Every structure is written in structure tokens, then in C-alpha cells.
Image (cartoon, rainbow, N blue to C red; front, side, top):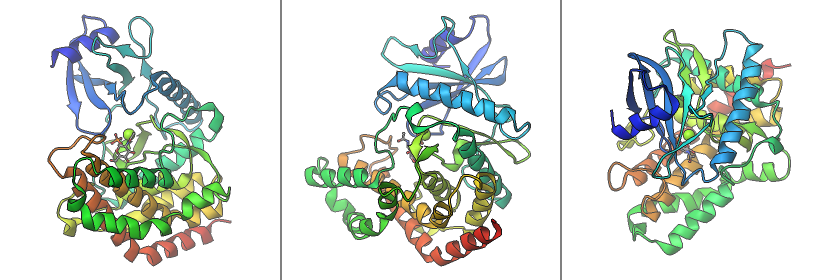
Length: 363
Ligand code: GN1
Ligand code: MG
């Protein structure tokens, strides 16, 4: 175990505990470790990315409020979802500050926890839909003013596009010419992706507390294939259900990886869309408006487009936000997202039909 992690653990656990730490490769932003005590997974230790989450106090206040709200919700639904708990430091704080200015926190570990990177079973998609649908219901007790917006304009396409245009103007890494096709695609597509932002501004789409980072691997599954928990609560903030639905589909229904370099491996699995939608709508039906549900296919494209723009902007800026494993990694990610976007386009009618069928069943 790296000594620094061992030191950090000393702030949370009594020194007599026999511990080991395994770094998880999940998540781009925070560093996450599975902590074994006497050989058994017992905790999740996380170093918070302070550059991305600049207001740690607000982040932790949000996390505590969301966790307690969810705990109260799941208590009424025994056997369905579990909620992680925060583990305080030995001196009674929620966060430990290390000597290098790093921030650390610890959660309890959900037993049997398994994450799914690539959906192979439709039952998993249905289960995932149910879990994110229940999550939406669970946090619906919170009002937007109770949570701090820790990252402003997180899924605002206007803001993301402005940042992209700014990067194009500055072209700091001199990389624009490498991304000629992707830049053209972004420019050609932006106007028709503004429907959701316009409907948010006009009040046609309700603002709610949503998760905002519903990658499929933020769900925890039991070994028998049930989705038992929703993790990564850092970006729980006001937004629309379309962000959550869309991001889950972006990650679950893509048969290729988020950073797949062989674009022929990227395809859109419409049955994953159908199964996830069935689970999500079944569990969040009482909250969702007809308009939100009707726009779910557009939401899948919206979130895929916005992620493509974010990766492209980071590529042009010289990889400042997302850690990369090789030069051009962010461009590969962008290409994969834009390819998925086009695959979704071919299935738009099929997605709309599925949604119309589901809606017809609602009373
Ligand atoms: C980041 O850290 P991670 O992997 O949970 C990002 C999300 C993106 C995602 C793309 C705070 O999430 O918005 O959808 O990467 N989170 C932040 O994989 O920017
Ligand atoms: Mg995240």
C-alpha cells in the first residue's frame, strides 16, 4: 500500500486495524480506493478533486443532506436500495486535510458491490432504470434551494458551447487542425440540440433535484443482478430528469466503450434503451411529466452531444480537465461520443415509438 494512503487511513481508522487499499479505476475526477479490513472490503476512501470541486464545505454539506434524505426514503422501501454512509475522521470531521492540501473522505462499503461497465443483459438495464428512477423519487423531497450548485452550468449546453468556442479562438495547444471533422460536426449540430435548454428556460421542463452523473457504472449491483445502490453523489444539484435519463442511456446503450477508438465497435442497443426506460418510468412515473418522458430520446442525444463537446474542448485546451492515457485520448473520446450520437440518430423513430408505447400504458 502506498504510504500516503496508509497515513490517510490513520486519520479515519484506529491503528490496530489490519488494512489494505486497492485503487479503483472507476471515475475520471476523484481518486477512489477500496479499503480492506482484515481482508474484507469495508470502506471506500476518496480523494476529492479540489480543482473541480472548489467549495469542499458546500460539497460535503450537499453530500450529507442527500445521504440523509435518501436514507429516510429507502427506510420506507425495505430490501430495495441501500445507501452508503459517511465515516467521520477519528477527530470528528467529515473530511481529512492532508499535508499537501488534499481532501479525503470515507464511506461505508456496500457488500457484494459490483459495477457494470458494459451492459450485456437487458435485465441489468431494467434494474438500473429502476434504481435511477427510485433515486429521482428519493431526492424529490429536496428543493433546489437546499443544495449548493457546486459546479455552475454543469449541463448547460450554452455554457459548454461558449467554452468550446473560446477554446477554438485561443487554440492554446495548436490542435485545432487535428480535430477538423469533429469541430465541423459540433458547429453543424449545436442549433438542433438547443431544444432542451430552451424548454428549461421557458419553464416547460421542471427543474428538480437530479443526480447529474448517471453513468451506468455509478450503479452498484448485487451478485444476483439487482441494482442495490446509486453512488457518486457529488453533482446532485438542480437539473432536469432528462440529464439523468440521457446520461444513463449514453453509457448503457453504447456497445462500445466511452473512449472506443474503433468506431465500428460503437453501436446503439435499442433494447437497452427500452429496458432502461421501462424501469425508470415505472419508478418515477408519479413525478415525471408527459413532456419529460416524450423528450427522453432527445435527452439521450443531448447528453451524448454535450459529452462530445466537453471532450473536444479539453482536447483543444491541451487536456486540462480529464486525465488522459495517451496523446489524443480526449479526441478519441469525442469521436466515440459523436459516433454514438449518429447511431442514436438512426434509431430516433424506434426510440420515439418505444416511449409512445410506454406512455400509452400510463393512465
Ligand atoms: C466525469 O468522474 P466521473 O467519471 O464520475 C464528469 C461527468 C462526465 C464523465 C464522463 C464532475 O465523471 O460529468 O459525464 O466524467 N464529472 C465531472 O465519463 O465533471
Ligand atoms: Mg462523477
